[in-house]
Image 1: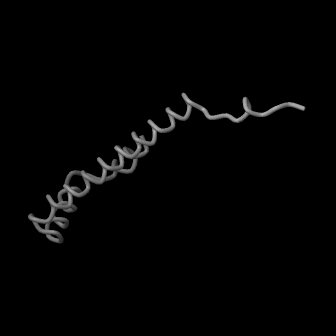
Image 2: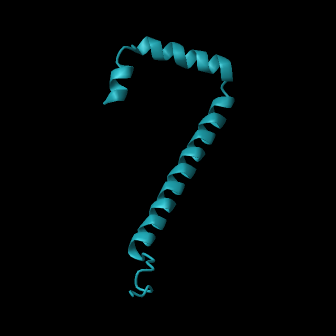
Image 3: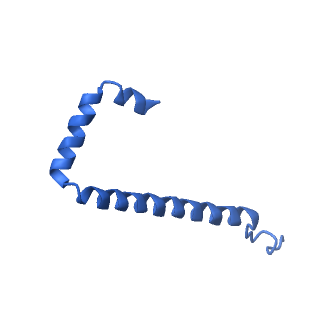
Length: 73
């Protein structure tokens, strides 16, 4: 919702100018490389988040508590 309010003031011709500037700065051959790197970075981030979720689920299922090993005087 917040993103839509930020993008609303920009018309289509604003985006065309931004795309042209990016093409001029990076060139046509460099942009696919940049997008490929961005995609692989996002994929690695998602994989690490999923891996962390799995480890927290395992910890929740198998909590290691020392309360059963303690003796009460």
